[in-house]
Length: 164
Image (tube, rainbow, N blue to C red; front, side, top):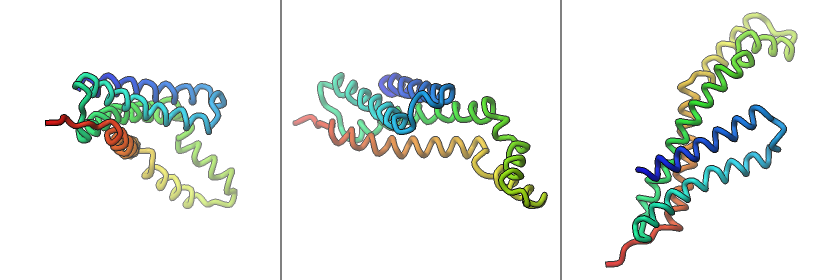
């Protein structure tokens, strides 16, 4: 549990810091480099958590335990990504996602749009990805799927059973 907390918090802080840097300085990190940095940040803390457990367990770790540790690390990250996403969406960029802003964009992009069509589009958008539960589910499942894959690979590489 201590490995999950320690490395989960490290991973969560790194991912959140990277997102904050990307928000504050959008051109600071090129898009292609941003994804590579994010992949490294996703993988390394989970690797270090499994390695730390294995080291403290006399060099032995089972695949299931490695997956459990990796998923725990990613669970903490999923919670942090959710908190950052909600804060970013509803506080930092609230005006960008407001109904008025959305309506203005529709009118600029489609000058012949009717008020009824605007209302339908606004309703569709508000029922979509803007709800905090949808944001949480997206962040949670994406992190857990990526975490499961990475944890399985890490566990398969590092697993070593005790010989009887």
